[in-house]
Image (tube, helix red, strand yellow):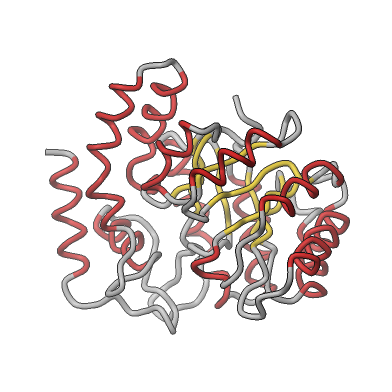
Amino acid sequence: MPRFGEVLTAMVTPFDDDLALDVDGAVTLARWLVDQGNDGLVVAGTTGESATLSDDEKLTLWEAVAGAVSVPVLAGTGSNDTAHSVELTSRAAGLGIAGVLAVTPYYSRPPQAGLAAHFRAVAEAAGPLPVVVYDIPIRTGRKVATDTLLALARDVPNVVAVKDAAGDPAETSRLVAAAPGGFEVYAGDDALTLALLAVGAVGVVGVASHWAAGPMGEMVRAFAKGDVSEARRLQATLLSSFAFETSERAPNPLPAKAILRALGLPAGQCRLPLGPAPDGLDDEARLLLADLHG
């Protein structure tokens, strides 16, 4: 079993009708996600609307969720400010979390040397806790180069994995081939999970796993057993979910929250600038669920 499990959900952050943090709702949702087959959770990551959460809200979330479930909880402590990321990582380290997810500093588009120094600083602040680098250039504006990831994996003992949402399986293959033993790659783009498993990923940090953790886990396990046909079949059943989870009209996490509302689970709307949900999205969510369970 990979360090953090095979299927983790990048959990949405529930808000109440006034868009205040719903801590009890987050605990309820976290427990439900574990019951559905998730091996771990990422809390206050991109899908958790980290950019709109205050530090106090994040710390409250991490402590509450980590205390409510028995699976690993990764805290999304990264930002575009190294000093802020270091401070938040240090404060999170004593809250029962299993590790931190450190996103590439966004908007400023630093050079690779700056990226490496940023992640090293976060790793030092994490102390003994493992660090997962989150590489998602479509949102951050900068790819973490494979050579940068390899240097971190070799030189920084607690940089143990990458959540790979770079959309380049060939480059992921190069990373896996050259990485030291124990360094793990998690798919960070649901639609590319099977492709990345084929080049050496160990699992997925997903969004559709909010409502489809079971079949996503079955796909990962089928591939691991060598049953590629079954893995492809399961992938095909998930294509509509992957297509629904983000779009120009309704970027992630708007669709995930619509699905959760349709299931009667805590979610609420998204804070600005993402929310509220566009007209018709909740109806589309109900139709998707009906098709999946039909």
